[in-house]
Length: 167
Length: 416
Image 1 (spheres, chains in turn yellow, orange):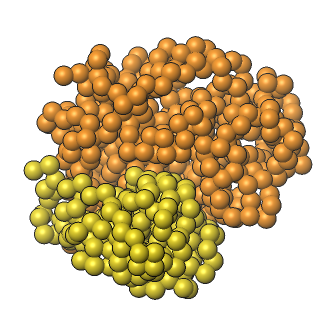
Image 2 (cartoon, each protein chain N blue to C red):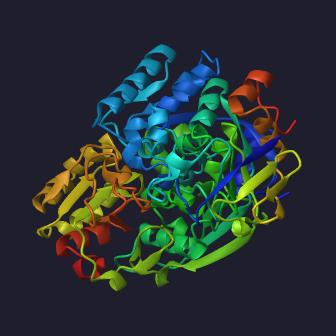
Image 3 (cartoon, chains in turn cyan, purple):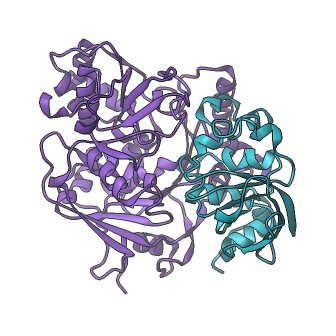
């Protein structure tokens, strides 16, 4: 599967409070409204400018903090096709896969704001068309690849009826 | 082969012999949500086509984050959780019962259990020897339906704490110091396993404070072996049968070992906007605060209120807001009986209902622009307390209480 879009670049330690601040707690059952505030304390224009297919690119420890699944969910709702990071906090990574949003671990230092990327999920490559460079991302553990390839944990359980990891 | 505590618990619970890096499907002994993550879990449960809870009595819905509700949207979220509890038989912990992690500590946490919660500070229960970890709403919805989850067995960082704490230095200073040492992603995907003579002497309350913050260096769990102190705690709670001895095997393989002499630690503070950004309280003495917040799943237990009351007895807060939130109804009740609440009120404290209170930026103490707060909570991210233009400093109840007296960040030494 090929993903195409433009880069929105962020730094290290982007917390789930950055992605969707606690002061919008009351909007958590209204995801389209909540999504309008995505990353607004870091880049106030992000939610209005991001387009279907675009990429969020971060640094180290992306998504640290709270277990709120709303963090990957608002990114997905806005059309973000994948999150590219140097490293990701554990719960954010698992939550993103569970809702079918790929988090790709790669060396994001050479990717810049507004770059055009083409990601080959099956092939494991990221082409930065703007810079003419190609990167690879760390392969998913089998257990997560199975969940991701079904589009998330719920479709996975619907298909298999149980966890089939480790079998 | 010798096992770490994480390998041992997951091997036993999953019924297969596993090592770090392996994947297990394990039964869960408790699956819970809170009011910030629960409504999404309920909706995922429904859209997954599930109709029944695998273990209704081991499925708990805690209303603690926005409690009582400050907005109609949240009142409707609470109504959804109450309805789900009525229809499916899940246990409901409603307004005023307390913070989920303290309630779990009181009623469920025990050696060798597997506990999953839709809240990152689920790690708190590791203090009682439970493999307890935070997940998102979808994972917990599935755990509620199937009574199990999948986990990667983590590598372990062994933390050996020796020596004796100096006067005015507490478990909170230790864990802030440790996170400063490891970094905010220093143990990502790993287990922390605590041991050493300083840990052997720690009360359960202190262990809960430490385990609670394991996630702040990225860890999946913060585990303590069970011992006589664990046993007495469980007995005192009428949960004698929940006790069993469990510890790592001699010769277990650790990713690395970190040794800390707690005698070298001084009152420690995390500066804005990351937990690993530490300094000593003495170094920050010039910083004025507008609000002092004592409470939360990190430091809202009876021992914490006692420490604060001892410092604030016959003293008065400066011209700042002093907010105190007992972590649970039981803590609140016991603090009234012990006289701590009266002492704190005489010192000028506002007592908030048991729950997360000011910690999450939803209600009960949102900071104004450019205001600073010293808090006994576990997180100081930008915007955490409801305003991205404010500043949060994390410290022990003693440092917070001392700072309330002076109106600026203060080493508690001078008041003890």
